[in-house]
Length: 413
Image (cartoon, rainbow, N blue to C red; front, top):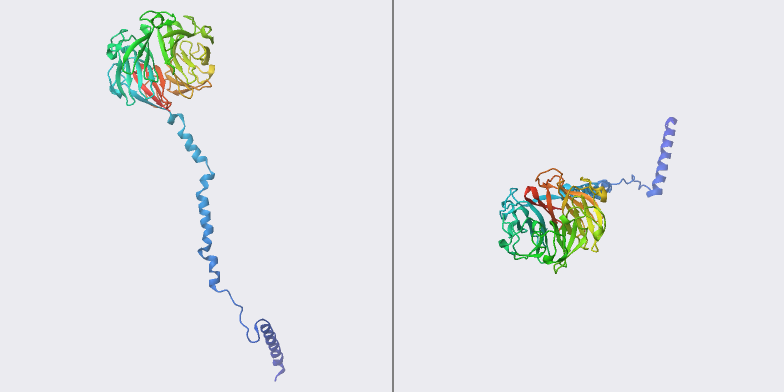
């Protein structure tokens, strides 16, 4: 054998021996196999949808993100509670023309409506001043004549159209459905039962004065606003005398606050206080009396013990500024009412506005722009024309006698 082939053969034999030794150690001699490779099925779980739950978990997280970003829901709520969408002015009754027609809604007509009251059933009572009659409006808007005869001036007691009035002004209703009227130019206080029977409970026809006394022995001078409490006591803004009167259930008339024919804006108790043509009166649930002190452009408060204070306005300063207490301004406020929460509402007559006063004395404008008109709609865009009377029901609705428009309006809030 040629020597040149010996060394390659030797090297080959050595490699074979080494390989055999390795196979014997791992798997036994002559049992050498290639390393086992993972089958394709072994890696399938890594790529199959078994990993998709991870993705499905992420998707719900995206769907609940709005819960962590409340900005959008908050904005939606803010839009709902804005004055424009919450306060709405609408028509209850009246055609806008002067008349005394009965009927439903716009089929009815009025002539100088001045006072308004609402009972527990939602019926409204209107002193239709220039027609010398008392009207009733049901909750469905049906207008009828409760007492008096249109165009017939007088002071006759009687039932329905047999009775007569002379420029009836303020009006109130008690829990039993009895209606009380300040019969202004007759200088008397009248009562109308639910059946329409009219009687005179205080004052004597065309006897002008400020005498206290029982029934006809008492006298008034241009009585205007009127209110009645749960005990049957009646309160009257005796406008021409610049005093506030009280009439008990037995007809006894006394002077609660103010001094006869003394004009002023002094706060104080009883006759130490003074007014200047008080027009409207209203009671709250605690027995406090609120007065529109018209020529003084003030809203006054009288406690049950006769202590008079100024709730809002600045004496002799006319305006329409909103604010707290004396920072707020009015211009010849007339009608006034209070709701069950102690908020006071004022028909700010010359300003053509309806104002709201919180128990803390904060004054805002509930409805009206100040412009003359009869537009319904949002409180901030509605218009009035010399609103006089005002009343609030137990649901917070406010009713307004829009005098120069010959309409009865409703403010929903």
